[in-house]
Image (cartoon, rainbow, N blue to C red; front, side):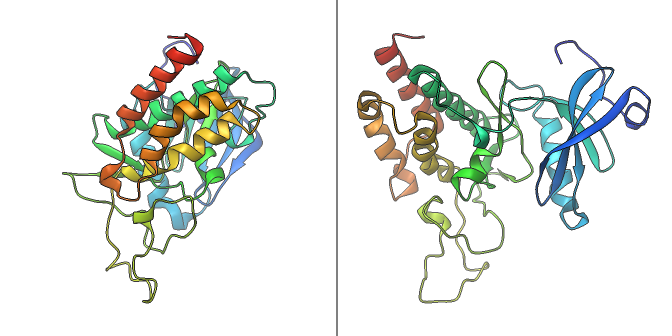
Length: 266
């Protein structure tokens, strides 16, 4: 929606101006339907499972607090166990078909992804860490593709807020897999997992995942030149020690330098 409107209320969604159509997304926490309000396409997000009510409303509060933002989906209104956001017909980044995209446009998605991380790590609320990112497809599904081929963070239910520099933990269960950062793994493989004894971590877990996300956007058929230019910064991102990884701002600065050097683009 391009014009300014007051946030929708319960009266608005229950009026004849509001119509609900097909299901366009569903997860453990919520389901999403395409809807219209006064002939504007919108997305209706509703609680899927009462067990996850706290997660749903945590995400709703965060979404409202992060408004307005160039990097987060536009919030339009809420009431009880539903809220309305802007509708993006291209869907999530996990569904993208990049076959016809130029190398520049693909790399701009890498830049855009890191811009969003930089925003999350440096916003007015504090440092926000992406917790719903235990594998590549799950990470990509958190983002929508806009009509001008950029990314928007759509799902903020599992963002963890670091307060006062304290470490965070993404849930209370053991995390596994090669996509997650080393510090997110249980450090005592000869012992049974204990949430109490599991060390915390910080936003550098997001940095570890950047190279694999960017590799998805670039695809297998992109020439070696850009990969060569990204090798050094991506190697730093994959440092086993979190403290040795760059910040999102430092990665963004290097990405923009590579963009200028290779594509002669601002």
